[in-house]
Image 1 (tube, rainbow, N blue to C red):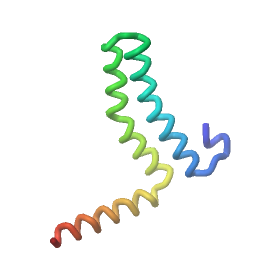
Image 2: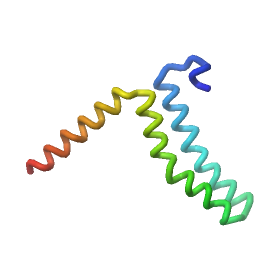
Image 3: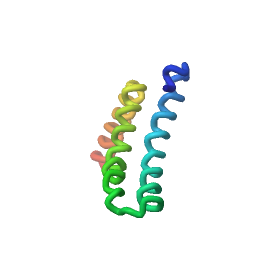
Image 4: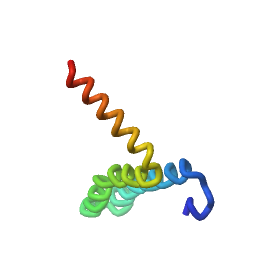
Length: 84
C-alpha cells in the first residue's frame, strides 16, 4: 500500500513494521476481552512469535545495505569482546 502511495523507503518500512506489530496487540485484545475465549489467544501467540522476525526480514529486504552494516558492527563487537 505504501509503495502505491509513493512513500519513501523509510516511511514504507515504518508503516509495514508498525502495522504488523499493532496487529499483535489487536489480536490479543479481541481474543481476550471481546471473545472471552482463551483458545482464540493461541493463534495470536503464534503470530506474535513470528512478528519481530518477519519485521526484521521485511526491513532487510527494503534496506539491504542497513542489514550489512548491522552485521559488520555485530562482528566488530564480537571480535572486541573476544579479545578481552
